Length: 285
Ligand SMILES: [Zn+2]
Image (tube, rainbow, N blue to C red; front, side, top):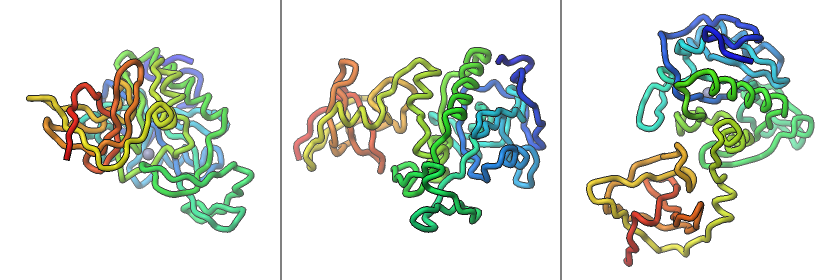
């Protein structure tokens, strides 16, 4: 596969009804369709709808890809969103929609109910009950290997052929509290590491490589005239979730060494994240 004239060669192009002006995409935002699973159903809706939504690429569960908006035009996929302090992600991102049922609830011991009422077999689809701070509580459908493989291949081509691209993120990350896609079963760390060649420790790795601190201990940021980055994971990849002002008191949750540096897991503004220990001072209450 390759990009030529902003089109992915070798896949169908089904032109979307809605699209914006010219863009130079910097990030890719991954989504779930939260829709029926029949091949083409979500793609047809995304190409033509009254909701004024559109996306660059749709990836079916069997790995089939359809392009709907050229890679140099804005699609209307992210809505109200922020990435590294910049709002309106549609103006600088490409969107990829993966066909998936989205957040489901229990219908019975063996069946999950999708938001549109359809019942889906928990064992047939390998549906799992998971709760995360980003997604909340729900039943979620895993992504089949061919679909993940197609997303990885597509991302590799995009990052090879579009020099302005720098990072891969998710709708839940750019629209926190408003969106939960892709679901917790999407192997985001694995996909980012494969495509970007960077390795973020996962939540599980971060937990395993650190120790819990007994409640009641605090540290204070020590960055005169500057802020300290709160990071989703203990690494220097683009994973900043907040900028903490100097001399802020932070509850200390965990402590660990990653890639030779001391990191602290702290709580700030209702979020948990990691800061470099070197820019904090012990604080005794
Ligand atoms: Zn989305």
